[in-house]
Image (tube, rainbow, N blue to C red; front, side, top):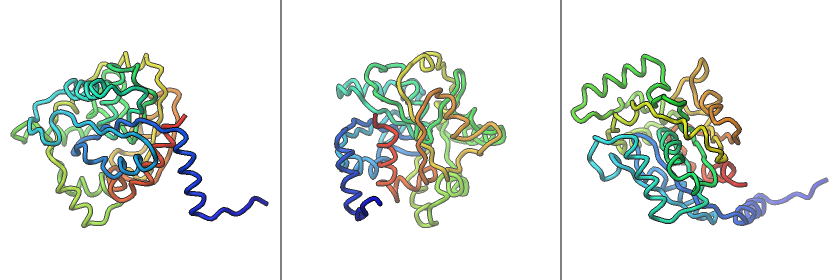
Length: 264
């Protein structure tokens, strides 16, 4: 019979093991968010002994300009990595950030240790982020784009509540919605040339949040296995969570799962 280990001792032993391999994370946020999206997870990763960077990109954060392109966003992330002389990094993309990670990997492949897609879009060559949704949803995005004054997308609250934060209570859902800013539309509609990405041999992982309701599950849609399978050989890690709630309420859990997805 194995010796019983108190829960606190097990946690401390696990944290000690984690410190044996300190990692450098670069965390790329998704749509309707900014770099502060990662605050809780970043704190927990740092407590585990890792270095963490959360770059901002054009059209987000304090930048009011919505006339940005996917290439501008990608270049900003790559420039951040180079300017900070970061090497041997774990490059993590959440949601739209997955497509940013794909293109950033093309620009700085020699600086990346592993790619992690955290319910992140993995686009096929020649596809856009909007292409990953059923046609009726694509039409809604197009209508939102056409009715905006600055080519941006503003989600109706019912959509945000049911599809982005379905595990949140109503008070938290309203708070998170109030923090979301209009999203530049153009990058989500751009079809990306990803031939170079699919020629890279960088190790990759997919961290699948099992209650994420943003995309339909099955019938040619969804995070896993539909998009994750495009990565070829990859590590799969699962965790409870929806698209945004647990980043605020369970950052420790997501930090641990990110480590599992990223370690050697």
